[in-house]
Image 1 (spheres, rainbow, N blue to C red):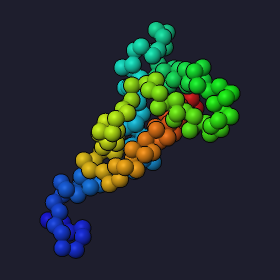
Image 2: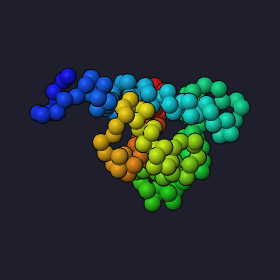
Image 3: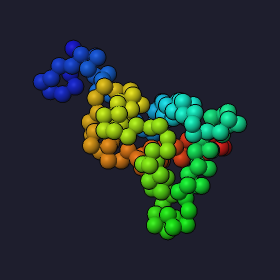
Length: 143
């Protein structure tokens, strides 16, 4: 038995479940990249036939965003690019989780944990966080 807090005993399995990845770690970024690219590969209706590579799929997401949502009135209404992209994601152009339980399960999967501390905070920031991660992925793939 290991002691983390005075008076409480925890076995190694419980400790492992309490530890989760931070969102700025390489492992988390790799988990997100694999998850998002898998979503794009499975979303056949969204992409034309000539798009084959992961880089082209991610870039096509932003081409679609620019064509459908990133026009002058939206730029004036929401000057922040990340917030505009998050608003576009809320319209569900991609097959990403959008219900409370699905978002929590995705967070557990990406963070490699069984328990989350701040589920409400995760739900509240989900769309803006997804937008940031997708933008970072695009920038990384286009280097």
